[in-house]
Image 1 (cartoon, one colour):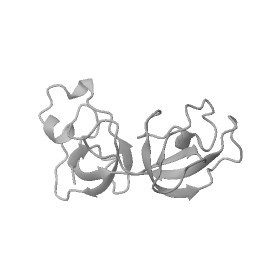
Image 2: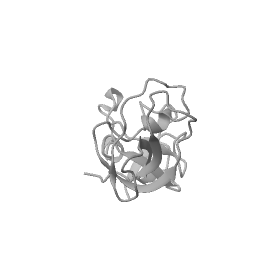
Image 3: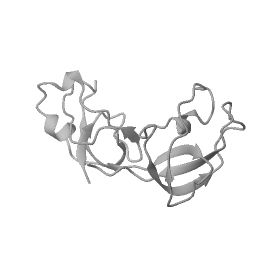
Image 4: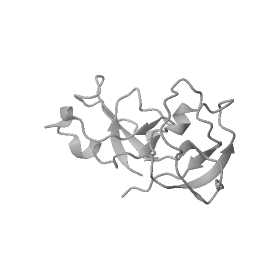
Length: 149
C-alpha cells in the first residue's frame, strides 16, 4: 500500500481524491519523494493515517502534511445501459453541460476519462436523476480501481 503525504483536511480514512500531480509550489521541497509518488489521474482512498507522524511544512497545503496510506479506489460512474454488466468493459457516455443534474458527478466522474474503457466490477442500478436532459439511457456502475503503472 503506498504511503504519501496529505493535508490534514484530507487525511481521514475513507476520503477519496484524484492525484493531479506536481504543483509549481512543490519545486525544491525536501519531501517531494514521499509526496509525489502516486500515479497521476488515479482515484485513491485514504486507508490509514500514520500514528505518531509529525506535521510537515508544505507550500501546497496551508496546514502542512501528514503521512497516510492510500490505495487505488473504484470509480462510481454512469455508462450507457446497453451492454453494461459486471465483468464487461464500459465507457462514459460523453461530456454533459447540465452541472445541476444529480447525476453529473457520475457522468463526469473524477478519476475516469472520456474515450477510455474501464472494467465494470458492479452494477449499482439506476442513476440518481429522474430523467436525462440529453436523453441518454444510463446505468450507475462501479469501475474497477485503476492499476498503478
